[in-house]
Length: 111
Picture 1 (cartoon, rainbow, N blue to C red):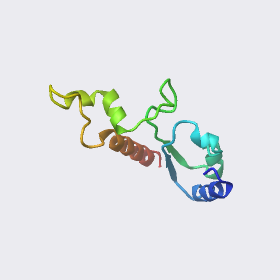
Picture 2 (tube, helix red, strand yellow):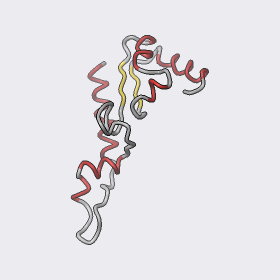
Picture 3 (cartoon, rainbow, N blue to C red):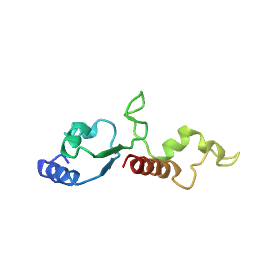
């Protein structure tokens, strides 16, 4: 999306899209010249879903996140492991999955 030709192709796709999902850190799409205002001008009815580990605002918004980090911060790892080991991540990527599910439900509701 940093190349003009790629940006144009992307905007062509957006022009016929009902929804867009992105998972960049906050501000990346805007820096690429593809922020919500630009995309809304191309496709006024577009449902824009931005999924990031710590939200679009707040003190942790720019921190990287992946499932294991979210598991640790949420406390779910405190119920794993044994007394002899440190906490272990839950085997299934529950935070990643739930983030995607909530995003999908939100898009469906917006449509």
